Structure formats: C-alpha cells, structure tokens
Image 1 (spheres, rainbow, N blue to C red):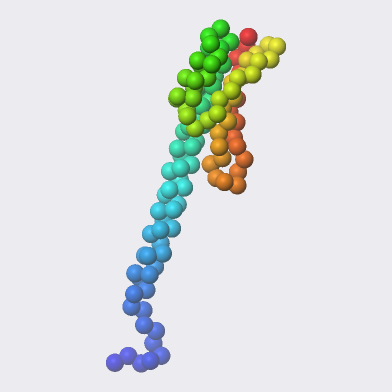
Image 2 (cartoon, rainbow, N blue to C red):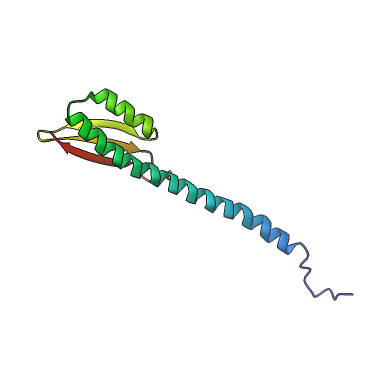
Length: 110
C-alpha cells in the first residue's frame, strides 16, 4: 500500500493531452489561415498588375475590376489615375483583428 505522502499521478497524462490537443489545433488553424491569407495577397499582386495594364490599354475599368474581384474576392478593388500612370489597389482585411488593413498596389504607365 502507498504511503499518503506520495502524490497520486493517475489521470495526469490524460489531463495534459486534453490541454495540448486544443492548443495544437489552434496553432495549426492559425498557420493555415496565415498561409491562405498570404497566398491571396500574392495572387492579388499579380492580378492588380494585370488589371492595371489592361485598363491603361483602354479596356473597361469596371469590367476589369469586376474580373479581379472574381479572382480574389477577399479584397476591395479600386483604380486611380495619375498624369503618367494608372494604379490598381487591392485592400485586404487584416489577418488578425489587431492589425491594420493591407493594401496591394500595382501601377502601369499610361
């Protein structure tokens, strides 16, 4: 029989696993979300460059921005014209609530 001074460790491993599994799932979910957000940002960079080139060549701005929205729906798309260049912006919501919005901008000469 055990002495009362010894600690009973039964169930300790189960408790540790019960705490570790949700923490691991949270970390995996955050990593997957960050990778997805980064992939959308990289795609938006390419789409913004292509859209800016197409609009500067004379294609319809509204049609090209709608096409960009279909490709990367997470972003808000807009175009602005300068004297020498046309720029397309994609405004992304923040990946985490405490971060600011992220803007991807690509320009093409007029």
